[in-house]
Length: 103
Image 1: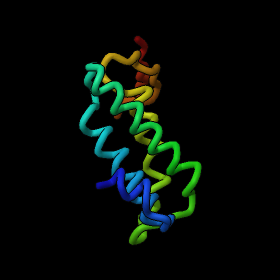
Image 2: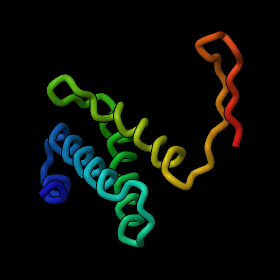
Image 3: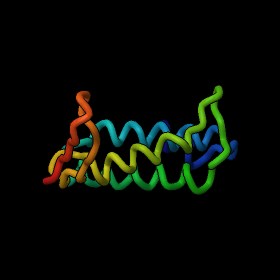
């Protein structure tokens, strides 16, 4: 149904919402899986999110701006999934001691 809305509906807000919904659905169904089907779903999710960001940066749906969400999801897909290299982190512990996480 979302693919039908994307391909036939000319209303920008509807297309944006459908692209965002399809991207989110595909992302959630394939997160942390490495099967060929999951990899294809992740790629399609990225394409949906990229189109939302590029084509509908100012669209809103009930006060929600769909273009803001895919940026975080794409970062998660590319950097925080199982099997990805852990980024180096630095900060302070509660006792003000230095904390450093290095792979």
